[in-house]
Image (cartoon, rainbow, N blue to C red; front, side, top):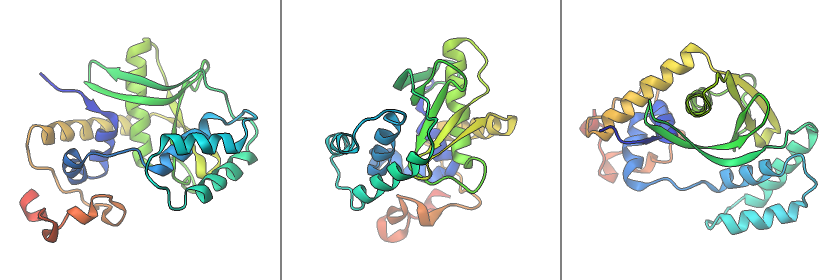
Length: 223
């Protein structure tokens, strides 16, 4: 029987299979910046006091946030420029696909198209959507189409530090990349060797400190 895979693990595998391989053992907690971005996002379009939002962030995130308040104020300032933020009908919604055996949590659902959005703690690219976020949108779209039984073109990506929302229409290429990452993640879960990506983003990888001989994990052992 095929075990359920989280959408985040599929996206991680798309970025770097070795990162997924190492992260399975260490576990990945919600990053402080993601907590900040999500709480700011949930109150966009309302008149909630910023200190109330900040107090909620402190309650949710146990880890210390070195530049947390500065990042929070930056997000608030960036998002205040845009005035037409939509109010969601639900948030932190569990979704799944029985066909592809994946599950995840959608940040926001809406009553009208685009029907969902994901929150990102990163600044928006100069144009378009990051590749990893396109794969996220493809995965969530797959789940929601199966759950609701209707065609969904895609979803929105909220780049909170930039105060920007962009619609991502799922293209065939996004679906192929999602499926390739899904199959690779399943291979790794079965105990097979992760494949080395052509251009691994090593400098930005949270597992960089463990991915080397001085930390007991040699790339030659994996590849």
